[in-house]
Image (tube, rainbow, N blue to C red; front, side, top):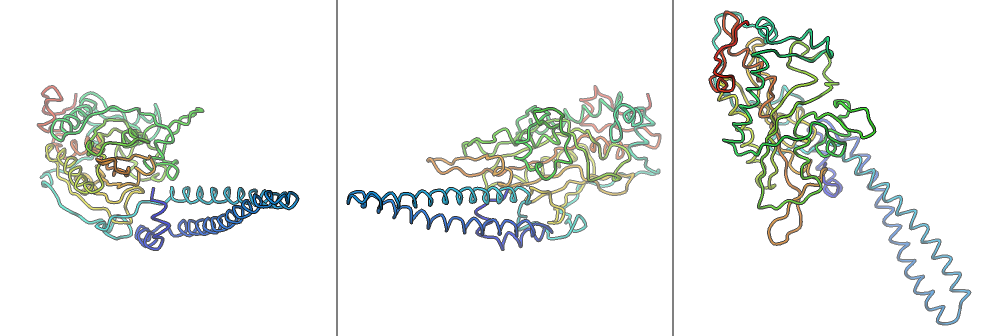
Length: 429
């Protein structure tokens, strides 16, 4: 969430920044109106408080002079002032609550280095790594590969649950597990992240803290009981909320966490998109990277986090590129995001496999996560960052498609073989 005082004092600058994202105008108009009403209420309340203080002094003087009837008349007037001041205080609280509610629907302000553009077509490529696989045959997509190898079943998953679910079998399930273990080992042993296994169910406060609520409730799976719990859409939610309503020691920053979780999303706004296969599922798995950073270091930490996610694909030997998202494609809470896009031969294009974002103080302000510098300094909001390191299902797809052979088998990348008991190739069982 944006800082209320900053928005109030820099309304035109905030409006200009959010216009680059194509949003914010109507909400800011309502915010300004509520703030104007708040200011008027405070001004009237201050005036009445001054009158009440003056009248109280006069009542004391009248009582000393024995003018009890006049004092009682003045006291009645003071009580009326007090009632009016109470009404004004309630109006002020209503205006301030309205302003906070409006702020909760506004996205983050883009960092000055974010490319300005209307949508994903204006994203800017930063660099590429590796080369496309040289296939002397027509590449199959992951659905045809997985089905022919007997490691993927979409029809039975649909029977069991519904569309956008999948069942993995044998070497396919083993490959999924191998990718999870490989990524967690890489991030903990080489990149210095602390592994954690968080709850897979979260409450409303956690989802508000990371920005999924209230704006994106339709994208979540809510449990039908009185507690108001939700299935996690990503490990970002529970891990970022570990320190909600706490004050951290600046000496302990940055903190770096990695977590595996299943992820559950309704994909409410994507019906008809990526319906074939397992690219866009209601249930999928991720290894997530989360950081808490000092504000002055957070953009260096973003670069490092992105490199950590890239390293997964480098070790697998899969061609990819990194793009900087434009203002029109930026996520709700992000101030800056890099997308890592992996090459898929069947589509002859790059597809997103990780988004690495700096939220600055946006999430920390919503979740009230602060830190204190040495010497008893005033608490400040931490900067939070996160990124997929990586999305497991899409990495599974990338392995199948990039290492497919003409006979329909799939070579297993060398770094994964220790996690698959030495298996070097997936063939039809």
